[in-house]
Length: 410
Image (cartoon, rainbow, N blue to C red; front, side, top):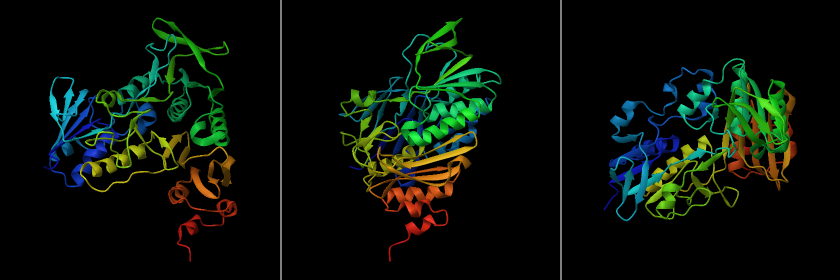
């Protein structure tokens, strides 16, 4: 008997792309898309930028598809609804309103939830975590000209919010326990560069410092206490310390988890009829071992791969991470990874804020970073994906065309 029904749990980028791919692949059975938010799938990158710059923005431009698309393609939307449990023996999904959704295949695109600070005052009204459209609307109300904003955690989200708040006229203090912003993604050298760019634009950076408490007056944080005893006065706090993958459904059904839902290169979990994609999926790493990617591109591309696999088509998903981040006037893109002992070659001048950097291990290009040079990233991605060999002289020579490296050897 063929596949008659598919349930996609998570009306986010991965879930939205999956239902699109299912219809584009010719599946004409029932598709049910279940999401806890009241909104149809939308893009999240604008939440830390455009949605904060314009609080009246309704995010209409950020939805993946118009309302009519889901009706035209017979996608059964269950929004503002939680999937409570999976009954894999009967092939059903239990919803929070008591309904049971039959499903021959299930895709878990449950994403993750923002990690919360476990300190006093962390639940005050002006402490913000950014994960959803509604989070962005609430946060924007505090990001007004002249407001004193403390950003805790300078990963991608924290660094982008710090830049957006500064653009809005806020006085921003950034707290990061590590030596610089986005250091896990960019490595020490380029983390230091980015930290200097934030300082040059007025951000009060406190790297190597943690938060030990918050002082609350009338339900709002008035001061943030650092681990060195110093106090930072504030009107609002933004916390960006990562996400916790939403694995509760999988665990409850006996599906293997390990810092995410474990999947193979077909995006299949330990149960043959259940697949996972996006931020929640712990997958095989392009560079060996296993990893969980939290990037836009991974959520979109892995969802496409999962849709094919659910329909029984050939699917083999294992790609290097690629992400971008827009901060101030900087477009930062990175593909691959940075081994501790990687050799770094810079193309262009770092101080110009328009450069590319390539990371090599045993002469193999394993990572590419570009700042305001997107054309070179389009080549860099392919060099990383092909595990291309190149010399430092080639990569660093501004007169050498990187496209030459993509040509077949003669």
